[in-house]
Structures are given as structure tokens and as C-alpha cells.
Length: 168
Image (cartoon, rainbow, N blue to C red; front, side, top):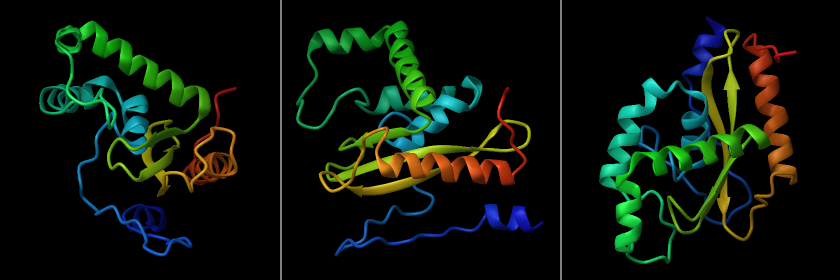
């Protein structure tokens, strides 16, 4: 029960920022625009996220970045074809699996940057994403930077505590 109790607690540590960044618990984060969402998109079965993907495609311009303005007619037509969406989702999945972390910057909020790593259980299923959030320009988002390295190590150790073992 100690592990179960721990998993349902929320904890927030504030860094040295003058004004801490706060993400409200329970808020629905984009699968495409946030690093945590990209972790879930990558490691959850497609059947578990399909309805969220479809809703997000209908309701948002998830494929645009800030400052791009309105989509062109060509872009609108491109994303009506599901094969382009699937191709972009596969790019995200490959990137997350290659680097062991997901990153986002300026997509959910123009000032925020984040890194997220997956935490797995004994049965190799994704249990949660652990994230570091900072302000763009003051936060190292490099996949081999110190924050990403430490996040990968911490997520791996936490996964091991939950009984996960790496595939040989």
C-alpha cells in the first residue's frame, strides 16, 4: 500500500524562479503540445489514446507553433488526410523513444519549456510521466543536457522501484 499511496500524492517543488510556474492538477494537457502528453502518446496503446487524438485534431491546431499565424489551405487539406497525422505521431514517438525523454517549448504556453520522462511498472506499462517545467531561454532543453540526463536517471530509478526491469 505504500507504493499505491505514494502514486496518488501530488508533489510540487519550486526552483529558484521569482514567480513559480504552476500547472493546475487535473487539467487536460495536449498529447501533441506538451512533453508529458508526448510521453503518454508514445507509450500508451493506441486504443487508449485514439479518442483523445481525434478530439485534439478536430478541436485544435496541434500541428502549428506560436507565431505561425493561420494555417494555409494546403495545410488544412493535408491534415484532413489521416496518414499525415499518423506520420507526425510516429515522428513524435520515435523522438521520445530515441532520447528517453520528451520535450516541448512554447506550444502549450508561449513562455513554458518542459521535459518529461516515462515511469514504468513491473509489467512494463506506463504508470506516469514525470516532468521538469521552466521558462524558455532559462531552461536547458538539450536531450543531452544536465536536466534531461538527471530526469532520465530519476525516472529509471523510480521505474525500478516499481518493479520494472530493462529489456535485455
